[in-house]
Image (cartoon, rainbow, N blue to C red; front, side, top):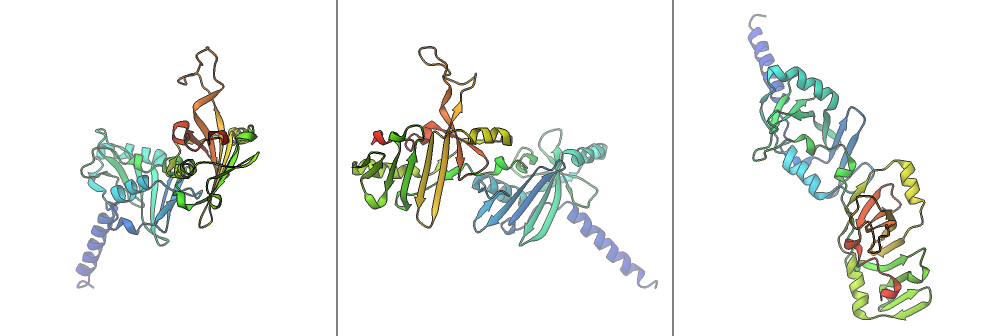
Length: 318
């Protein structure tokens, strides 16, 4: 029995060292293997990011911004370094704040959880971020070499911070048909089809348009982005979606791709630039922005008139 004691002590020592090593090993050696990320807070807010093929999607199937996910996967979870444990004098306060406002981060690869830790607040100098491995007792100060800032902002639980702002991106030769319906101006509505080159269909029938106008319009549907998203209560969403749209845009493309964008006038607001006309009359609608609904979704996309001016044409513009 006495002969085995040193061996047992050695095993226990090695286990303790390994456990200590794992307690501060926040970085993922091969971040490209991560295919699901779950970030949550105690109040129930969360963001689930999941990779399908070469693209990432949110819990509501919205596509994730490639820039945002690259910042998290390639520039953050694969590069986290530890400065050392949190100071003993701050330990209790760090843990308390982390238990209230911290974020839990779970990283998966092929449905297997490979790492789980908590992201807390920042150090007094704003250059470090407190992190605690799940099951551990000691929080550590972490950073990314070459980056002078805190990391917790990169682990957002707000889905709108992750969602790609790209609404659609069609090459002109992908598009088969375009329909623009103006419910309050039937004479302004029109349809264009690749099968009928240089032909525009309106409520009066069809007419020929120039080859240049036809081709130019089809080229206008590349890389269109929203300015942002408004997170509104359901009652407000229902109110906006219950209005008559300014225009309903539908695009049919090859490979069964289709986009429907309902565009609504956006109410003016007191601090809006250009609130009044030259005659001193207050505008009822924002002339620079619209609300939009993509593919019958439950989010308000805010789009700029400037970015969509080449698309928001009327039949008479041809």
